[in-house]
Amino acid sequence: MGVGLGDLVEAKEVKLTDLAGRIIGIDGYNVSYQFLTRIRQKGTGETLRDSKGRVTSHLSGLFYRTSNLIEAGIKPLFVWDGKPPKLKERTVTERRVIREKAARKWVEALEKGEKKEAFAYAQASSTLTRDMVAESIQLLDYMGIPSIQAPSEGEAQLAAMAVRGDVWAGASQDWDSLLFNSPRLVRNLSLTGQRKIPRKNVYVEIKPELVELDRVLRALEISREQLIIVGILVGTDYNPGIKGVGPKTALRLVKEHRTLDRVLANVKWESDVDAGEVFNFFLNPPATEASAIRWKEPDVDKLVGFMVEEHDFSRDRVVKVAKILRENLLKKREKTLESFFG
Image 1 (tube, rainbow, N blue to C red):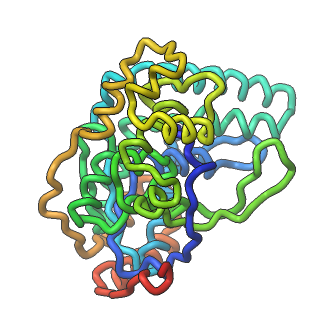
Image 2: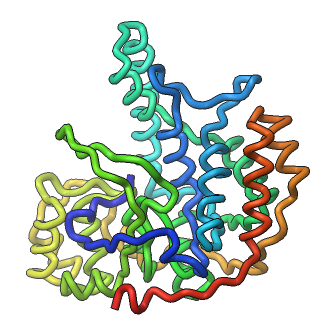
Image 3: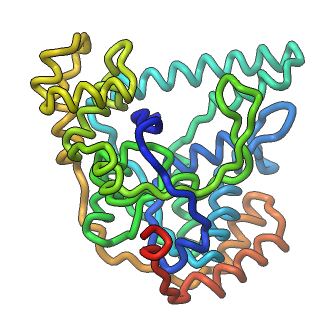
């Protein structure tokens, strides 16, 4: 998902406590999808479910891992995607087809007893429904954590909020946030465990990372507008990339030709998508003023009713987390990262 800029962007590893005292806006769809993908039963790859058969992997991740952020002194809020732009229609369709194909292969792998393959196909079949999003927003409200509805892309909304100072940084796994002009991006905020390096039998520990847009642009010696062009050449959610052009080649082309028109005159643009329309969408995406952002005391009774009585979570664990929320959510902590990243 998103644009592949990882080979060009330098990220700084951080601890959760390094972010204490900061308001971090979290891409709700992005992190919920991660929970659905990663929180699954070993062997079958099935999601967690309650006694009525309803999926609860997203609720488990949202509840327990968000409480870890709060205990570390972070003040989270969540931003949820609105209506996707027309530019994204092809990507949305392609992703649905991929999920449906993965779901079929998941069943086939289970029938053959291929557990490792089954788990991978199960992850690829993950689908975040409207009902899951509604449940997530309801849970966050009971936890005392605000949710913001974006008019379109959540990352664009987060970027606008970060520019205004409503949040200190946006948290997402996608690099698109930088193209939308977010001054800071935090990756791996809600993820734990290990990640397998593609095509290698090597695993690395997943740790939070901070990416600062100004540092990226200075290191690459380009402007934000030129970074958008790099993204367009590589491929975004709104256009396919140019065949054979990866991040390093895209950067070279942008440095050599400087503007979108000149770059396009020197590459073979085969997409029927208007590159200029994609460029302008990143420059001026729909976003709204996020007024009346407020954290509140968690409602323990509603949390127990929702998590325990409705969805079969452990009462002891839910009450314990509610206590953590109550003790930490409304605390005022001040800490800066300037010395850490000076």
